[in-house]
Image (cartoon, rainbow, N blue to C red; front, side, top):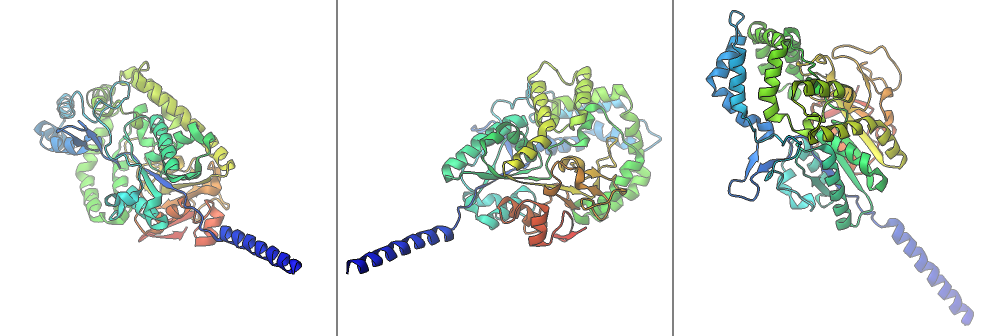
Length: 494
């Protein structure tokens, strides 16, 4: 009898152990919190916070400035003269009028040391999940909020967070705030790690975070969507790389006929192109001569640009790595930048972060972090610098967003071949820092990620761990390769 009881007891203990193991094996794994870091201008900033005069500061002040410009007779008169080759605009009158519109102390600008002015900042700093902030994402169709919506659909809004920050400030300072934010979310959720998506300027923030805090091993995934990690060639204007021609302006308008918002404004750009042959072309020719005149440029920078945006660190930090020294030299010689200021110390520090990015993400990958970069192409550069023929996403140059891809000029083809070369011969991903973790989205313009589009789903699925962040895994699961073209929100291999 004792032997029988002993056998029964052993059997029951074994059964309990097996059930315990099975329960553990089939238990639902905890969801890793996902944090979205938005880009420049995607989050409102305010002045006079907490007072009766609290008001949103318009992005770069463009709304107020545009309105004031259209109401300023002196500006309109001088601009109209640019459209007529028989007329000669009065430069001094134009600069003075623009200065009066901008003001001596524009509200959007930072202090001379690159600090946010007292009483300004964000008011929607959320440390609770987006399930508590449905008004931010539930009807979002495009851009960062649409990605947030896709993340909520993928893993549930209770697992998604949005890191809001004042996008004007120094990127390294924002990275420090992101670190504190991650610690807070980890503590609240008891998660061991988090996944972070850096969008546009948010990609630079994520880069600075990795540079300073990667050793803490808090990341499960790091996803970069149209990231400003390497800068933007249009910011070469700080290095006085200014070039405007009739040919480049008209070519740009032609490009935008089909590129801008998927061709939804094709009629407008066609009309501008027709007008351009006679009027816009005249203006472009005039402006081309204007930017070759050092006195004109000096007046424009010192009397208009400096009081408007000259002290905003994040804009300075968009200068490409290889243009930084020239930009500092030109702007300090002009008096636009004070090399003894706190602003210079900030931008110099981030310049170092830019230079270490490739090394940093390679080291992060070795830690086991899932890393993905999404760079777009198919649009030529903004026609104000010598880099107008770069492939871009309509803002950020593809070569920078991809961390080193070899990219053909717009409308041209590469002679290279191999598994990392796109079939349209526009991209060679083999020179990227992480060629097996970098995707190229043709015709997905800067942050034009639409809710429930293939592109947005792919970003969300990688960030949420639904698929590993490498080309082979994605191709196996979704039949999507490294080079993808968007048509009607669907991605096709190219």
